[in-house]
Length: 462
Image (cartoon, rainbow, N blue to C red):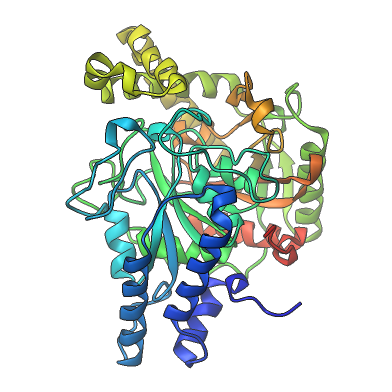
């Protein structure tokens, strides 16, 4: 098959930009044409910023020609979930309440990507205020899965998952409060990285739950995700959750493999769940065997019950979301989508005692995971227990088929990597969980699994 430039990695694109065999402008025009042709089927974008993208690409090419090199993301196209503020570009949160909102400043992530020489292609579909499921009553249609447009992308970074899977971009930014980066990565067959809580500033990103929200990339490969994280990580003194820690080289350990590592598997999280599709359990078992054959020690471990992590996270999320939306829920309830209002009003039913108990349990759960990671370099476990359902099947289907919430509660870095295909030829994957601020280890194991599973050789759906 002839080489297609949308299939070239971020690192390879950078080499070609610097070698003079490809320009950022040529790549950007190609991707814009691809979006124009295919996005009417998948609805990944709310806004395509064509003029801005071509201006960004022209600037990147001129700077490289003049010897100004901004690093590994220079000239690379990307797109942002439409909860990231972008100066002069509409940021809607997929809601009637913000349909005409045009920010007067960039979010920190948008600013960092611009300073890194990135090329903004546009703003991506989400669930309303990054919450709930697909709702056809919202201002824009829900994103569809490029592997099969009758199927969901998961949420809430739904457009981000679709855009990367369809190769509209190698990198898209999402947010993750209960799995909203990792869920779309699982359903769409992409890499999805939720960094450690505090690694990436959330300033200028509309919040869903203050103490659970994380910003991070969805990407075509683990290396692409590492390069994106390199561009956006760092301390922000104006984000009260931001961690003032050095930013490592996230690609430094990618090729080290897993020989000598100790990896734990909390099998009890997923193995006994009635929602688990057999092929997902089998894929994780195959990944465990591959890791062992590659030299890792892989053992089952026991954490607290998954249900306790889930309940703790839901109480915190609903309480914080209710506080964020309290004024609009009182004054403009009719402007929310039906699914959104049903979720957001739950916060008003919680008591202070409920929240305090959840915060107390959160400390115990975090200690439980930290204690386990003192004995292991990382954990691997399921993320989605099912492959992507159809839109018709989603009706009445709870998100309990996802097991991503625990690591929002504890703040540990967690990444989804694809493993292959399951029911109806839809992608499946697993998540890797690391020690706080040890994203290099998570990426290292992810890169090994990406290679061992053969996913890095799988052609895209479009």
